Length: 121
Image 1 (cartoon, rainbow, N blue to C red):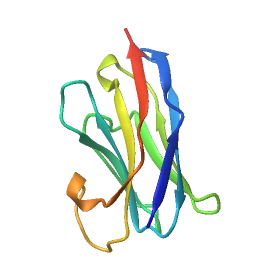
Image 2: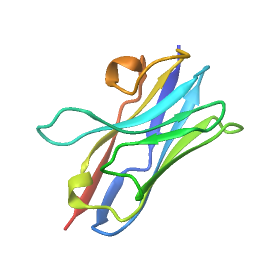
Image 3: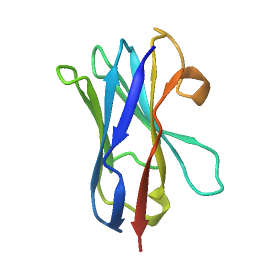
């Protein structure tokens, strides 16, 4: 089973940057970041195919966030720039070993514990 451990969350002012990391143990084909803001459903943020690095983004973060991975270190990253108060959420790392699938929660079978990101205005 894939195990995931996130790190890098914190408090930042609007317009600032943060970099999240997700350490991976086990085989994975696709990985993603999701987030859950207070009193909202968990939503997709970004995803990456581990083999070829193809990326996908939610419209709300396109151009501001960058997902990447370091195969040698078995780590996935989320570089978040130009942060806004509405980016405040618990961010979760997710993974799947399935070759085909979508980008919804149900498509990912392994989850990290989450890391808090708070953006002050």
